[in-house]
Length: 303
Image 1 (cartoon, helix red, strand yellow):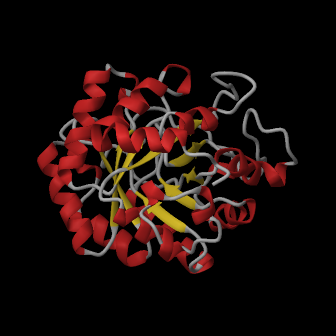
Image 2 (cartoon, one colour):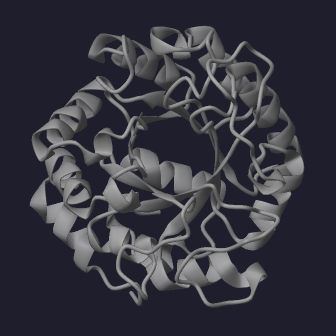
């Protein structure tokens, strides 16, 4: 299979988990995952979805935050609930994933946020996501949810057993998610990473350098090297609203992430209005130049 940054939509149709992972790895640190918020049920440019805008500005994969597996809905998609994601995939030609959130029992900071059943990191929701047509699951936590690494590990293990080879599983936290014990540089350890990998995670998420207090380039580089030594892929993530920072800041983060050796780059969903198209394009150009950025932006989904 081709490297993912060179794939047409037709190349991805029917691709196996193993083939997709190989295509991601073969892209040599040039794959962009754009996260999109569904919290406010809004669209940046009606009547089209934010996902279509993200794809027009260079996103390779789309990640939906706050998608409810029990009550499927994406603003801009007029389709039966069970066809929501397949319709979005048809509109964008991209692989589509979602966040699921395994709430833990560790001590939390501040008031916990209420979470609908359909967002929880459960096997039931993983199976619903598969049946809805999602390609991958990210086990992580939004601010104030109390998601911790022990709960993520348990979810990875149970979901891999239930899903088999059906879906790609990402695992890790972009920020503390309300956990007092896993804030700052304590957000993840090598032991956590090894446990995620052995439980069946395919891609391990880390905060991008400079996005979480104490998470430096050196820290992320060391963790990415550890992830690769276990035969897994890494994803560095901007989950602290810096996706809405200046273009210069975005470019600096992008290059630091590239230098850590990461395989995939995540751009968060907290830009003003939930998406910052210009920063997405700036990130893309920083890590893969105008050639691959414009190719991704212009490539027809009918190819």
